[in-house]
Amino acid sequence: MKADKGGVAVEERPVAVEPEEVTKITTSIFPGRYVQGAGALKSLREEVGRLGKKALAIVDPSVDKIVAPYLKSGDGVTYIPDAFCGECCDPEIERLSAVAKKQNCDVIVGLGGGKALDTAKAVAFTLGHPVAIVPTLASTDAPCSALSVIYTPTGEFARYLLYPNNPEVVVVDTTIISRAPVRFLVSGMGDALSTWFEAEDCHIKHAGNMTGRLGSMTAFALAKLCYDTLLEYGTAAKLACEAGVVSPALEHIVEANTLLSGLGFESGGLSGAHAIHNGLTILPETHHFWHGEKVAIGTLALLMLTDRPPSVIKEVYDFCEAVNLPITLEQIGLKNITDEQLLAVATAACAAGETIHNAPTEVTPKRVFAAIKAADAEGRARLAKHAAVHA
Ligand SMILES: [Zn+2]
Image 1 (cartoon, rainbow, N blue to C red):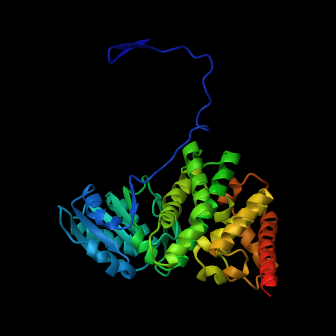
Image 2: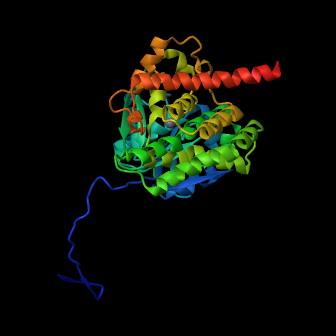
Image 3: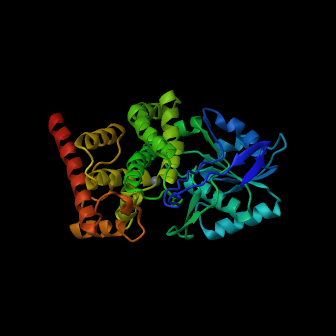
């Protein structure tokens, strides 16, 4: 058959063997734009103006004073600020959706921590409007993602809400990040630390990413860059944050925690570190500890479970110690954990549908239990050695 395309005759060539389909399709998902730097919030109005004229600004009360100067109407953008109630739950999503509708808003802006941002995504999705995300912490890789975690009004996990699109724009002002307590930045490094190992597992196992399709080489390369960036700049970034200043190292780590880790986990895929994190949350003692701190423990256990080379295991423990991420169960509130409790954690981590089944090894609750114990033992041995040196 011949078709005329732009004046050029195109001939279809006969194919003897059709390629296999479906299983080999890769999919990568990205936010529409990512803006980062010291003073990046000065560009917020320009970025929001690209998306609409009237913005409902959902503001975390804890950052109200910091972000208020950037929410002045002008340049064709009107802001309607509204204080976020503190929980990403259905009543709050309904309340804010009603406000946006009543005010005829055509774009949603979320400013603050993870729950405020997740609520902004949910309101935008409910109304079919674009969303601009302004994280004021670099503590997780959630800002760039196409999902929200929905809780009950009293704070229990309810469900994941998956969206057809990632946020239209993410704006990260590193001046604000540099003035937040350093534990947020370090926790973000703990979340980002898992990204490469989980993506690598999915790559080896040919397991799907968050879209269910295979990860692309782009995603795996970004996940690896995330890990390399942590090793190279993690310590210097922590020091800059402690000093309350923006340095190139801090910029690199904020990008690793927020963008590289976000792209890496969504498009590369998750494995055991996050599943073990989820298992750990069944114990109330871990609730005072942050997502990335528990993910760091999950990462160390995953390295044991998947028999990573000793040189890699050493590198990761050295990194955790250098930036002050936990390496023992005691450091996440589990000093007195019993074997029965730990087996319950491992069993929860191995629940049907959990991402730990993307690990390229035999996964059973007892093997996961052993991996967590081995990771904790390694961590304790290291701390004992340091204590002996300093004694
Ligand atoms: Zn995470």
